[in-house]
Image (cartoon, rainbow, N blue to C red; front, side, top):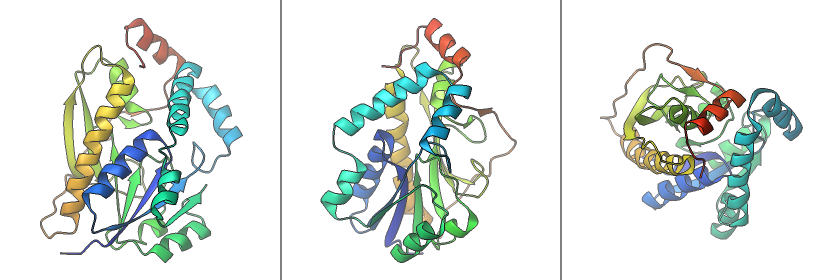
Length: 251
């Protein structure tokens, strides 16, 4: 058994990451948690480059909905940044989790495990190797299907009767790691998207807690996903209009 004394969480400062961090850290009072707060929407892109990419490839309506959710979260003041100040947690901010300063800061904290919480930064091997136990993350699907971005939206627009949540080992290749734990949840036809997001995030927290308890033990087991599954991009204009025509709701 490998004792876990320090965990470095890598997260965007948003409502989903905040819920995950709060639930997981409360479950392990004996573990010291640190935070790497990632900035910028897309990995290694400036705010302007991210906005231009969204305008070209995604739906303005969907982006506005997610921006409104982020605005409400920031207005509530119960953010990860405020938690860091209030609780005196080890933390650093980064626009590139793999740059020299971020790697040095992570090494200074010396985590036993890296926890990936709803960030779009992509980890290189050097960063993952900082922690003896490597890293684990969560994704709202049963791998390998529904890889990609905002896939809870795509599950809704595809009228799926269920949605999955997976906790997996972090690898250099995105959405490809061995699965530690997973769960399937029912999707109600009239369930609004913000309710789906909350539901899968709460289940993801439960699975992360279970995985942390198991990963340091000698009895941990993994499922290796087979095949490529389906990949989904940011919600397109056509998909959002279909979502609306189907009578689906964001809130």
